Length: 410
Image 1 (cartoon, rainbow, N blue to C red):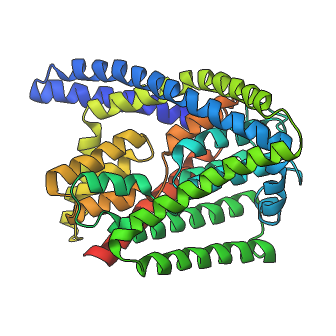
Image 2 (image 1 turned 60 degrees about the horizontal axis):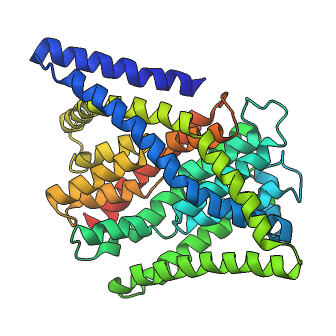
């Protein structure tokens, strides 16, 4: 229901802002810009779904091999002590556990293209346990928070954009991003546990969360000890080796179990094509609304108001130039990425505001895209409290990214 009102609000606010520009400034072209944005956004939504088709076919095909070979179930048992606490509604040994683990692992490695089909597979597995097919379960909501908070150990994409923009040290945002995304994920999990009545005093859950904090601390220590020019090289190497190793593991397990690996892949790939077609309407709905909202200038109005407020109360507003990235991040991954790139081209990749923008960009994932794609892939329309809790993770991640940027760069 919350997504329904937010979706309509994009149109109403865009209309009011455009009407104000026409009446006050005599801007007659704003309406053409808004309608052009609606058409281009609809085309973009289809292009995204089309681009995902091959990726979905590849990874859901591999997942089908892993499922029949027992690898997915193995991963599910491996992570069961933690996930049985976070997802009490999923039976032990259910394939959903392994799919969730694979998705979260891909996100941690910064492998967005691999994470999405794995996440869609996890949603399909959880939907098989859902008695009310149009309503999100507690397990789905917890899973959405894990994805929206976007825990990522290796932000390869942002490093690449900074390198292209001429940053002296493209990897210097690695540690701020790691800290910001960890804080966002930690707060998101804790908030969702409280909402769903999951005891944070559970020794196993506390040990896992504490262990994750130690892992993050270890990664910070390891990469901070490397020469700056080697951080990107090692992070990319580790992520891609692990990913290829998983593929080989699936194929090897299939060979050992004497299953028809090729036929299994084809069957899973067909599911990938069906899933890609299913998410098109949901992508069109959310991306058109966001595109019209941006084209109306509503985002610029919000940014200017925020900057004026911070200046008025005497708070350092040097970071406010990166605010559009934070505001756009939950709405559009490409939009927020474009704003980050625009800042780097305008002020330079090593400018403080550009680094703040990069830290925000890497702190969380694109909430409304995730909601539209993941819930849309299984036909869930009643998202319950997914939106406010996902936005909580977004706000915490952005604030943490700003603070981390001040700590490391100011």
